[in-house]
Amino acid sequence: MRRILNLTLADLKNVRRDPMLIMAIAGPAMLTLVFRFVPPILTEWLTQKFGFDLTAYYDLILIFILQLVPLMIGMVSGYLMLDERDENLIQLFAVTPLRKSGYLFVRLAMPVLLTIMFTILLVYFTGLIQIKVVQLLPTILLLAMEAPMMALFLVSFAANKVEGLALSKGIGIIVAAPFAAYFIQWPWQIIAGISPTYWVAKMFFADSHSYENTFFLTVSLLMHGALMWYLFLTFQRRLD
Image: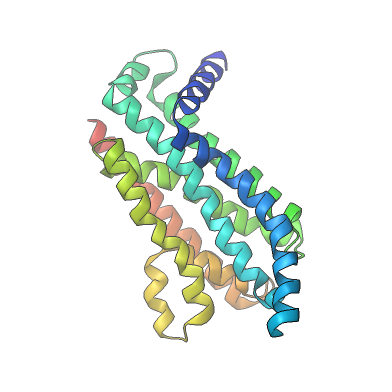
């Protein structure tokens, strides 16, 4: 436990020295504050000015900002792992009592915990929609899987932090998948199905007690699990 705590404290020091990482880790908190106060004001203005009811799109707005959380948090973890890989620290951790498995646990568990915390905070502090915790659990599970996926993606395919930044910007397009699921007619929207975020959005929009919800949850779990396993194996090969 003390070794894990030491590694976590070292992470905080590394993040503190990099303004970009500070913004990425503070991003979910900023999103929470913005979407707590801005939507009601904007909704009232749009209603009075144009007769447009923004509340009809609150579920879309919510799933969009929720998808940003694991992206930002996973990016931070991925950058830290890229730094440690470039400095051969991962190999060093592998021969310490922490071992490679302990190192990987810390690197992937922390984004999971932070994503869960910020997801719950975003949903219930912003108050955009009313949803029971039981109904939210599948979404929390899938979003929590996306954070370590993002970290593994960066450390598996980026040669350094510069490439990692470019890749993180490119992969950011996947947060647009909920808009495809919401606005594009079937079957054209299925093109967005190559993104795991599409299936999460489809599940989120479906009635929680419907067969559709179960189907989309099953597909999401299978896709997230397969991608996680593939990225983990790619990361392992990159280290060897």
